[in-house]
Amino acid sequence: MTLLKFLKPWEPSFIFVAVFLVTAAFFVRGAWRLQPSIGRQVAFWSGMAIFYVSLHTRVDYYAEHQFAVHRLQHLALHHLAPLLVMAAYPGSVIRAGLPLRARMKLRRALQRPFIVVLGSVLLHPSIVTIAFLASIVFWLVPSVQFVAMLDWRLYYAMNWSVAVTGLMYWWMVVDHRQSPPARLTPGMRVMSPIITMTPQILVGAMIAFSSRDLYPIFTICGRAFADVSAELDQSLGGLIMWIPAAVLEAVGALLALRRMIHLWERPSAAGITANRLAVIASRSLS
Image (tube, rainbow, N blue to C red; front, side, top):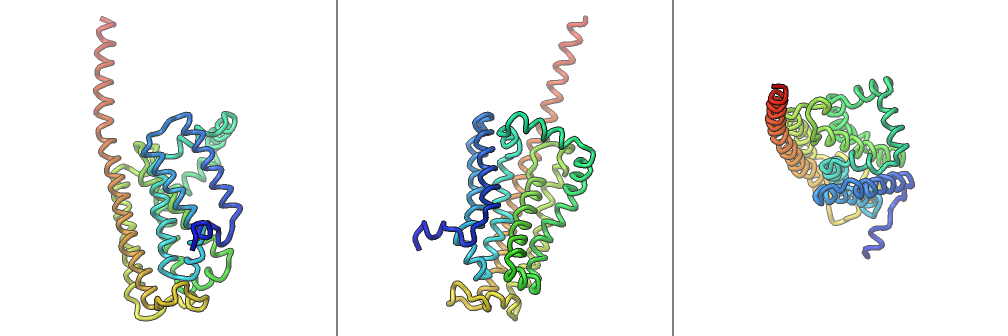
């Protein structure tokens, strides 16, 4: 297969392309103004590239016809790509890329009582964490998976829900701010991935060691790799959810730990600065 044929979208999506291009354009514009570090830019563009390859190339065809590839696609959408994008702290850069009038309107909109209440509910750590786990576990229910793979609307909803909840969750975990305004305390940001990896490991193990074909829809639709049996395909899919997902959760916890250490150091520095200012002020008054 040529690279051009691989990059050709299996099922073109105007909405995805529009969201992708608008986000990329605002980030480029904001990066030109703020000059974020090379590491942040590499992380952002790597995550965006993984999003694109996972959703808008031939990968989507294999994900529809092979359970293991389907799990790899969701691993990328739910863990790897969102973690990379959010580790780049793109919010400030994208906001800087907005036109001045748009930034002012956005600021006023975010201060409206209805938006404040809605955000406090939808972005509550418990809601975000439950949605993060549910977006994986719910779609793995065999009867739900069967229908979702046949109905293109449910298939799109499945992939978008996995990507959106992944972005919300990893934004919460790798948030670089103090709490508040961050939704989680630094310590809970470290613990959260350790907590959420446990049910994913259990579900992955159950799928990997299951003695029956839980997802016959891939056989009905025709597997992309005919040499791979249904049992092996299912076991590989369970292992992907079990091991690589847990590794990425651990990476997220380490990033949160690194940020927690930085936050511990920051207050001490701020305290020293405040003491110096107090001494200077007292001297000037005397």
